[in-house]
Length: 379
Ligand SMILES: C[S@@+](CC[C@H](N)C(=O)[O-])C[C@H]1O[C@@H](n2cnc3c(N)ncnc32)[C@H](O)[C@@H]1O
Image 1: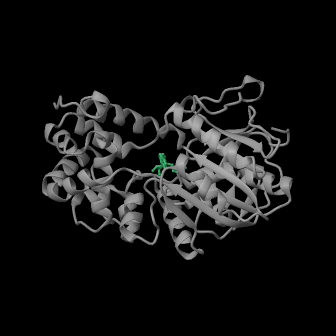
Image 2: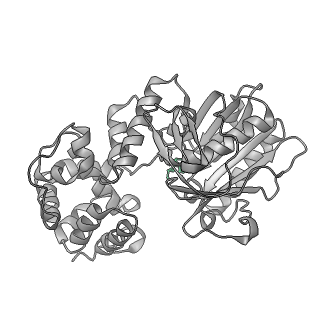
Image 3: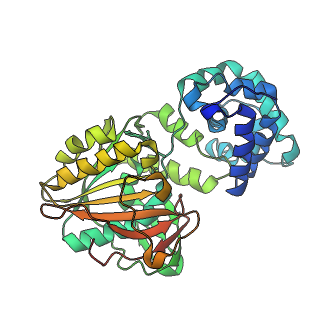
């Protein structure tokens, strides 16, 4: 068993053990089995240890293997990955692979493709862009468009590939709580509404979209897009399909402003490009964890200074414990939904300073479910 220190001084084998438990809890049996095996395999641990310290996480090796398989490498391991069959448009006929043998196939794959894997492990970082989160953003945007009576200009910070900027092109199924969007969209989002009434779900008109990321993914770049897909779990076909659909939509849409840079330093310049006739919405989702408390404070100052010149809505979906320096109003009635992230809205503008904000919703990190607390009260 490897004892080399990995990210945050955790032994690589322990990281695999912890990741196995995490994916097991979140419905990823394939990676659970692989990581349980990897935790006991010195060669696989040593392979991950070629990655730079800050990137040395199981997900990086898993994504690198997935990337090679999606890219066409022919190997018995591919038969275990539903995403690969779908990507290659193949049906695995005959006997289903024996789940007990998946790790031995994985370890063989790592031996056979060590050279290509080392290149990926030393040059790549895992990346995500979760369009399922749009299920929480849509009712918020619908409310803001109605409230302000304007088209929207969206400025998304930590935007990744910018896929959430196209929320108006997706189909939304909230079960008994309603349907919205383009029913025939390549992105079909299903979200269970566990509390509250979403109100009017008219999809607003978006006249300007812009995003900033320190490592933006350009959807026109086939390799970068494939890497984004490879960072997903191979047995979460629904997520894979919707990301793939969202990439296609982004490719066929008009170009958006996608800037490479630091979001705190770049937000003012980015927002300055928003047309004055539209209502400016500054958004971010699952990004603040990357910012120190000091940088979160600076972000709030930047947004406040933009609002000194024009009204804007600041809307963020973040995990409350990750945002010590951003306002995080409690859920109504003190209700706390376990494992939830919070969607918070601030309405700012000249003469409207930053207050506690309004907690619009608590939601599952991938938008599987939503507790909608309501958007009507002033912020
Ligand atoms: C977990 S991903 C979330 C992506 C997207 N917002 C979503 O919800 O799917 C976090 C993103 O934030 C970006 N990021 C982190 N810190 C950043 C910074 N200081 N400036 C710009 N982008 C940053 C990362 O590159 C990554 O694309």
